[in-house]
Image 1 (tube, rainbow, N blue to C red):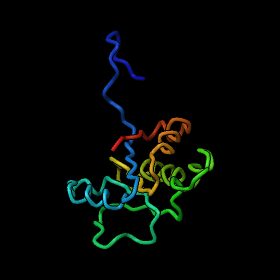
Image 2: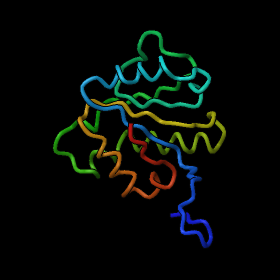
Image 3: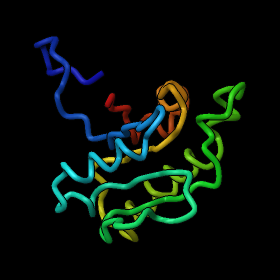
Image 4: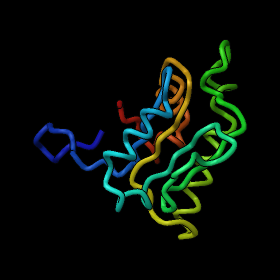
Length: 141
């Protein structure tokens, strides 16, 4: 926790990249609502991680999409280590280093799309995986 010297207040400056998990019955619909309501000038700073074969029709050119082969959040019975030590965490690590090496533009927000009923696997991964937790923070939707 960052505290202002002598004030006991938590610092408002958190430079970690926010991650929002779009989950539930229709996560794609929630993403579409965000795109419709969002500022298109921000799209180049947003990244979407989703289990899809191809970008949906009408996908904005400047919005980056990282495709995963599976929806690892929605797989029942997996522990945190099994569920998040694969595609999503690897994609987040690669993304961070690509931005750091200036191979990709800066990122202001990451959206993880899943059919899972819960965002808890991401919350737990950010809590228990130091590399990810130091670079990303969970942003409730």
